[in-house]
Amino acid sequence: QVQLVESGGGLVQAGGSLRLSCVASRPIFSINRMAWYRQGPGKQRELVASIRTIGGTYVADSVKGRFTAWRQTSENTIYLQMNTLKPEDTGVYYCYAEVITPSTNSYWGQGTQVTVSS
Image (tube, rainbow, N blue to C red):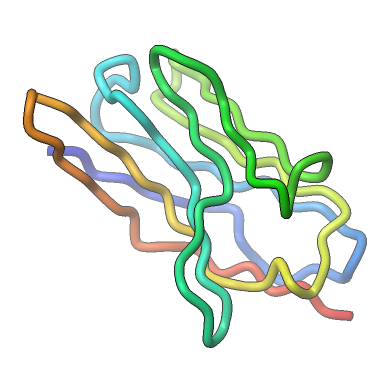
């Protein structure tokens, strides 16, 4: 089992920045993959960034150069730094964890709202 708690969302003007945090209830080195997803109004949930314990970090083309994702193992936390925010970045941002045991178990946080005003 993994509980995930996100924080850091809010209302910001276009061009501004926010940093999201996701704290996991177990050591993140034991989690195969953690990721940030988002769901905008009327849109499907989409992958924003992914961090693998073994492997690299992936950032979606739509946010590349503006968003950075990283993990802090000592804090069991992953972060998403969002710069130069645009109105189209508005949505609920979810933290995701995947544990392979060998079956794949997926866990979601409750989500945090990000609203970018124009």
